[in-house]
Length: 418
Image (cartoon, rainbow, N blue to C red; front, top):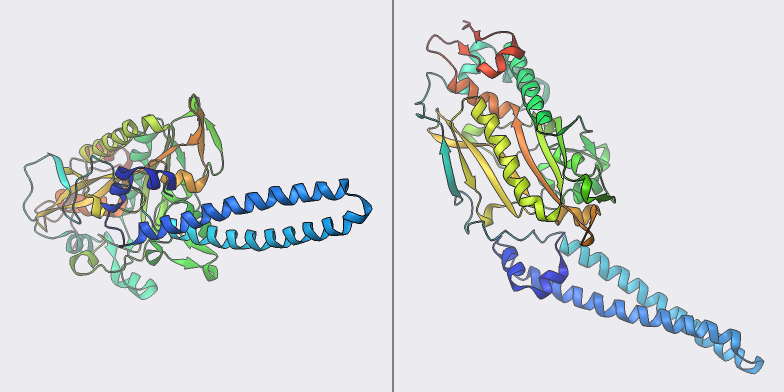
């Protein structure tokens, strides 16, 4: 949630929000509502003070004054109840509107919208030309996944992952988790069904509700990333500065509706409704979060680079940032069949945006303040398999296994089938 005081007092803070292309009039509407709320809060405080004073006067009043004093105190009590009810309604309206306002984009984020981010660097190469078969055709021919049978069971954009591909996936998870533990992350297997309030506090509702599966009549929701349950690990806690940063690595299945996708993205396993992912989440001191952001990015690069995949780093434009992110880097890997880079991981600094909703604070030399939260995808497994299928397939229809995964797979190559 944004800092309303900063929105009122700091033009650059407001400008950072406007760079995200918010709905016209939203900020002025929120500020007007907040002004009414603050004025009514002052009124309620004054009425409470008057009521307390009136109650004390009853005890000091003479017998002939007592009835009038009681009547006056009763009138103040009724007026206070009315104004408190109005204030509660205004606070609910103000909070609901504030939840729609995004975190301001950081000054280092470029202006622009989708596909208008700044490419910071390209690593790896030469870039491979289109392989004999794209990942969908290759995966089906070698027997790594079966979408037709999955469609009969679950509908479109699901797949049975099979044979050596399963061992590849498990090897990736083990390798990535081992790297993260070595970097000081605590491994976690979190719940993947969460309550609505958790989705709100994590910064995903109300804006991303259309992408989420709800179950049990809306009592619970399937998460699209382990970031959500990881973010609430320290809800309403005060953490000592000497305990930070707290770094967690969550491995979980993820579920997304992927509404609005079409074309090539619906083939194979590039964009499916269910997939596995390893996610990094960090609670950091406010003055160290940008350093932590760069650290998460370096880990992501070491993972993609370790798999031998050519990639580039993109500083995402303000108009393409999600509500919670003040800044986001995307790692995009070269997809030979399409002759272009496609996203594989990202990492974001939310600053204090989510911590304000969560009530997660840090106690340090400057007092007790909302801390900063960051997240980054260590590895989206099915998306990573797509790139491996295209970069490591061989002319005879087989596939090599990246060297770093071989100790966990137990094989260096899969021979062709059919």
